[in-house]
Structures are given as C-alpha cells and as structure tokens.
Length: 572
Ligand code: NOJ
Image (cartoon, rainbow, N blue to C red):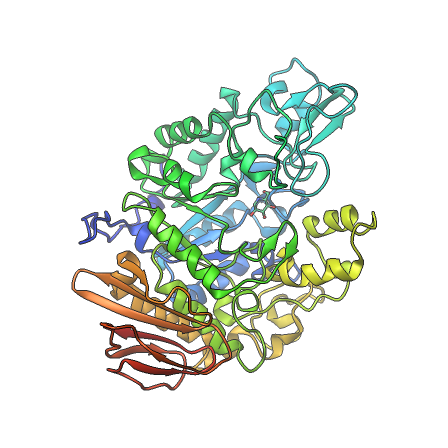
C-alpha cells in the first residue's frame, strides 16, 4: 500500500509558458543536496546521520529550498562512501535505522519539502548478497546478475579502465573469471541485459516510492547498458572512457522500460548523472516526449578546467560559451539543471569565485546570483550557502577519497608524477574538498559532532565560516541565498525565461538577460577583482535594482560601475 506521505500536493499547474515550456513543479523547485556522512552527527560517533539531518530541517527549510537530495544512505561497506551498496532496503548502520528515515521523511513532508534519493544501480557492493552468490558458481540463480567474462589470451577480457585507476576487470579466484567494475573493484557492474536484474531494480525503486519519496538522482545512469562484445578502446581513444561507457546499445530501451514500469506511475522527479553524455545526446534522455528522465547533470561546466585528474586554467568567456551552447542546444521539450558543485567537485567559491578572506562573501553571493537566475533546476550543495571553501590539504595522508588514493598509487608511487605536482592538482580538483564536515558553529569540530573525532578533517576556517554566524548576520551568504531564492520563486522569468548573453567575449563581466513575455531582467556579474566601468550595449538600459551583493545603488543607467565580485539584478 502506498504510504499516506505520498500525496504532497504539487502547486504548479502544468500550463504552458509564453515561450513554450510546460510548467512542472520539478522545474520550479530548488534542490538542496545532503552528503549525510558530513552533514550533522547526532550521536557523537563522528559520522553524520539521519537524526542529525532531521534536527536541521528548519535550517534547510529556512533557506527556502523545496527538495532535498540525499546522497546514498543505504547499507554499505563504504569503499566509496555509500556508492557501493550492500543492501538497498536497509539504512547504513552509522546513519541510523529505517524508523529514523521515516521520521526524517515525515519532518520533510511536514515542512512541505520533498525528498529524492540516490539510485545507484550501475553497480552494487561486492558484499551485496547478489554478488556473493554470483561469484560462487557459473550456474546459480545469480550467476548472470553481473558481467563475467573468461580471460582473453592470458589477460583481461578487454582494455577498459576503471575510473579509480587500473583495469576495469578483476579476476575472481572462485569463479576463475573476470568481472567488470567501472569504478572500484568493490563495485561490480550489474548485468542489465539480464531481465531479472532490471526487475530487481524496478522493485527496489517501488519500495522507496511506496515510502513516499519524490524521485531519484540516478548515479552514472548512462553506463547501465554495455556492448556485450566488449571491444577494446578504439585506436583514436582520447583517454576519456566515459564517452565509450555511455554509448551502450540498450541504454534508452532500459530507461524507457523503467519509466513505463515505475516512474510513469508516480508524480516524481528524476535527474540522471550524465557522465559521458554530450549536449547533442541530451534530448535522448530528457525530451519529455520520449518518457525517460526529467533532467540530467552535464559535466561541461564543473569540469571546464580539468584534463583527467589534472587541473588547467579556465577563462570566463569559456564558462559563458558553455552556458550559451547548452541554452541553444536544448529546446522547450528538454529541461536543464544548474549546479556549480556537488560531492564530486571542489567547493564552488574556491573553484569559480574567490575564497580569499577579502572577497569570499561577495564571490559566493555572485555565484548564488548566477545559479538562481539561470534556466534549469538549481542544485545547491550543503555548505555552499555558507560559502564553505576548499580544505588546505598539505599531504596525501589527509585525504579520504578512493579516487585520490588510487590515482596517487598509479601516478606518484610509479614515479610518473611528483608528489608536489599531484598535490598541486588535488588542491584544486579533489572531491574531498566538499566532503569535510558541515560547519555549524564555532565550537569544537564546528559543532558537527558532539564526539571528539569527526570521521574527516574539519576545515580550520570554521570559527569564521559557520551556520550560527551566518544566521545571525543579516548580510551573510545564507541570507543572500534566501533573498535570491525568494526572488526566483516569484519571478518565473528566472526559471523559464529566454536567455541572452549580451557580451560573450568580455573577460571579467558576465552580463545576460532573462525574458519571459513582457518581463525582462538584466544580470551583471563581475567575475574578477577588477573595478569595471561598463557601458551597456545599444538598446539595453538597466532599470530598477532588485538585488545587489554590495552597497551599489546605480539604477536607470546605461553606464555602470562594478566593484570586485559585484553582482546585480535589474529589471529592464
Ligand atoms: C558518481 C558519484 O557521484 C560518485 O561519488 C561515485 O564515486 C561514482 N558515481 C560511483 O558510484
């Protein structure tokens, strides 16, 4: 029986906007992402938990968001912090119990918010009961739940590589065959060509939907279908396996089947993590007439300064070009997402802004202005509303992430790169920057835990950067987010409006308009420490000032003076 919690009313009327979008609640919603391990510990064991989240629901609601995306909370041995699931129907012991989850969900619904869960079904943990059986023999009921292949000429079945370094195949001693793992060897890939596997996935989705959750973020969903002939990488392989792994032949059949069997029966929101998916392929996933997913996360913006695990400099015109390309490349049948970080990326203010003590607050507010005036469903990562920054790692021992550690072994311990060079890049790119504990107050361990030892390092800047300070200071980043979220809620042009970059080549100013029907807005963002005097192009004149992250007062003018990291929103 569906739980009574399921029926949260959806206020959006499904009519069509002046520029052709069908209005949907999940298009107008703003999502707050929680990485439970690092959010709030309620029992002093140093690990964030569900009761910790429940205790902070007023804080989240206070920000003005509508939906919470919870990173994996399922039973897991934590080879990849929960992205290796041992039991899809059990809560991770460190995070609490199913009763705690029900309580958290009740608290979310009572506050008129929604919850989406992480659906991690490209792979399971090697400790999942299915894999334990699968590796036992070639002829039991679970033998074909995973992808097994004999060795080929004394080697792995093909030359595919894992995202966490090394071959994507591991030889299993008991079956004397290799199994595929696109991530860690403790994350074997499921065999989606086996209809029983697909039914299992549909069933576990229904299990959670019947609890009353409101949708899923789908982990590396484009990888679920594999070319079962397993050819080697092509001759011209460019070192980016994701584009090959995302090109499986049955991918869209499986997504349409999942939609038919499960998703179409609920009013839920779905967002696929689309590693390896180009802009040109996007409509295949999200065109509403195809009945697959609602939205996907692209990687182009967050990875604009990356080459593999290495960092490279980026420019604002490149950033703007990505925004423009994506805007033009998706018609009104598709819907984008807008995010600047998550648990796999560095902190947004350190990445795209300026985390110096002088400019951090301004820069974080500027990024909030960008995100909350952009088309698409915004996803805000925990702590970004406080302007939390990258962690000042000084040596490899301080990191936790399997990706950082495995690449260290593959690159540094083999003398391919020096320790200094490796750290230089990780200081800019590591996933661990966003995984440090939330900074709640200025007490020991930032108030994250009452215990003496948090599971992971706390950023030493917690005395200045924390939620208690932010709530008390009306000029804080948190309050600015609140203002911007309120403005977005009442301004449909920020959600659905047409987008126009009015000066794509400017190296430090991002200037664009958003227009819906008769309503038009101008957004000006100075992505630099330079003071800019800017004359608006012919025909554009700033009107009344709706929001500013500084004490600027200029209005009704074509000449504007922007200070370092100034952000403004004008009515046109
Ligand atoms: C993407 C997740 O976001 C990441 O954290 C994880 O390591 C991989 N998928 C594997 O599940």
